[in-house]
Each structure stands twice: as C-alpha cells, then as structure tokens.
Image (tube, rainbow, N blue to C red):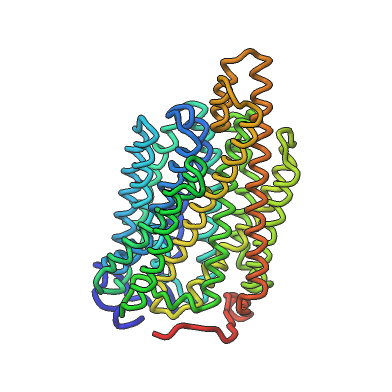
Length: 534
C-alpha cells in the first residue's frame, strides 16, 4: 500500500495484509455483489416494463430510449468523478450514499406521471449508481489478495448475471398484478437490505487520496457524452445531417479533445490518459464495451419483440429471457476455470466470437413466427459468451496497470461497461426505429394508420380501434417491419462483436492464469507489456 493510500483512513478501517486479505472478505463480497444485483435488476426489470411504460405514459420509442439511457448516461458520465470522490472520502461512505440516492430516486420515479418526469428521476438513479460501482470494485481490490482476485471478480461478475436472470421474471410477475411503477418500487427493499448488510459486514478501507477534485474534466466528460448520445437518439426524428445533430457531434469531438489535453497537463488527473498507451488495458476495456453494447441493445428490442410480436404476457416475456440469463450467470461462475485453460486472450476472443455467432444466427433466421426453442438457443449462446468474458476482462483492466491506479482502473472498468450499454441502446434502438419507420411509411403513407409508423406499440394501439380484418393487416405489417428492423440491429451488433474478437485475438498481449498445485489458487504470468510510467 502506498503512503498516499495509507494516510487518512476511514473510521474503523482495518489494516489488511496484502497476502492474507481481510478476514470477512468472502461474506463482504456477497453483500457487495448484492448491490450489483440491485443495479442490474433495475435495468432488466425496466426492459420487461417498456411496453407497459409506452402505454401508461404515452411514451414514444425515443422516450423509451431516454427512459433507459438517462440512467446509463448519467451513470457513465459521472463514474469517474464519483470514483474520485470515493477515493477521497472513503469507498464505503460513497457506497452507502450512492445506494441511498439510488433507492430514493427509485421511489420517486415510481410516482412519475409523464415520460419527462420519469426520465429526470432515472437520471437521479444513475447518479446514485455511479457511486456504487467504483466503490464496490475499490473495496474488493483492497479486501482480496492478488491470488484470490480472479475468483472474487468471477463472483462479482456472476452477480450481474443473477440480476439479469431474476429481473425479467420479477418484472413480469409484478406487471401481471401491478402497474409499471412496481418496476421501481422493487428497488426500495433491495436497497434497504443492502444498506443493512454493508453497515454490519463490509469493512471500511483506507482512503486513497486527498488531491483536489478535477471538476473541469468532469464537466467536459458529461457535456461530451450527453451531446453524443442525444445526437444518436434524436437523429431519426430531426435527420442525421440536421444542423443540431452536426453541432452535437462537433461538441463531442471538441469536448473529447479538450478533456485529453486538460488531463495530460495535470500532475494528478481524474483520468490518467497515459494508461491508454497500455494495449492490454485498452483492449480489455474495449471488450467490455462491446459486450454491454450487445447486451443492452439486444435486450431493449427483444422485450418488445416477445410481448408485442409474439403476444407474450409480461411474465412470459420475462421467463423468455431465462436461457440468456442462465447461460450468462453460469459462465460467469465458470470463467476462472475457462481462463485458466485458455488464458485471458483466448477467453476474451472466444466470448466475443460466441456473441457474434449467436447474434448473427438470430439476425439471419428470426421472423415473426420463429419458435421459442430456436430463440432460446441463440440467446443462450450470446449469454454464455458474455458471461465467460466479463470477469477476465475486468481482471485484465486492473492487473495491467500499476497498483496505485487500481481505483482509477476500477472506475474506468465501470465507465466502459455503461458507455457500451448506453451506445448499444442508442445505436441499436435508432437502427430499429429508422428501419421500422421506413418500411411502415411505404405501407401506410396516409390515414389513421400513419400513427402506426411511429413505433410498434403505436401500431398495436391503432390496430385495436380498427376492424378485425384491418387491424390484423396492420399488426402483421408492423410485426414484420419490426422483426426485420430487429434483425438488422442484431447483425450490426454481431459485426461489432466479430471485429472485437479479431482485434483481441491479434492485439491483446498474451496473459495466462494458471492454478497452483500447491495452493489451488490462480497465479498469473505476464509477457512483457507496456505499463505507463508514474
């Protein structure tokens, strides 16, 4: 532990041996993982509730994208600042405060009466969650010795699979009996339970710094990311070459350049930009971004496909996500074994390859009448690929940088996850929306059915007020248009995953994780790798 890390500890922080780890580390890991379950559960429950939200709040596809993205955008944009505050004031304090804000935001979001109100409170929830993720990773890194961290990361990553696993089913069961607001009320008891567990079990760890906060960098990152995502989501409405779209793209480029220039000048920046000279760090981060791009983008459209095209109830639609979630959670738990055999490079390449194959098959074979068993096999393959690579990618990010940058690396780990997710929803959602409107405009250029051109929920709402014959004709056309659009989105996500697999296979430095015969614990061996200077 550096001298900077050892001074100004939290009250009650333990002096933990680097080799032995904290005596309560495994019990504390379960509590910390429960916080991740709460955060990922929220998004997966919300995916199930999207059709109900569209009806209950008269939300358009753009509104639904922002209801989802307001959370992930604020989450991603503020993670670095939140991680810096956590290092300054204590990771445990940041975790408790973030959870409390997340829970309060959830309760107020449940009372929203318009899409705009819900978007605003989702942003507040994202602010709270931004403090949770880096604080959780920082505590895990400090509690566990290096030889046990692969297992700890595997448990932590599996928790994301558990959230995805129980979220759709929980959301479906709630929506069978309650309104869409239940998708937010469910967070309140989960947060209360997590707060009690943290206070009783999770130890405080030493604060890692007392440097001044890098507020200019935080402002630049928030403005740049906000401009980028708004441009992607709103471009189908106002045009890709519209002045405002081009202005927002320019703002993103300028903010990114200014952010890099500012951080390079600082002695103690919020983000050590020189870390991006480390090839292993960059490629591991990119694999996480690609994984969450595919995860969020795919779930965003599949929920609507199951409920509206196949006519599933919310509960049945939630159960339909089980093959994906079970495979993801299972492979997350098995990832240390897979990584020990294939190495980190082989595991990441294989995981991205599985994602690419699964999404390609889904995009090439799915129509409005595809049997569920076929879809289940495709989802399971995608979920398995995601599950097997999350833990080793996170481990590579933290292991490929000097120890003094571990907290920063943990925050960046969460940033790339959420940025990948927000771009997945924005890009895939926009592609689906654009293609759907194009096909429907050709079929229904005028008359009442023109409302159906907006999105699939609108088409089904219009059909309910038409004659049975006309209604069936409209829903059939809309279902076909949406399914075709969804397939195109899946193929784009598959292409991104395939490119990622190729880049990782040829670009990631070889890093293996083997099992010591004497201890039964993972040990690491590393080829020469670029590590930035202090």
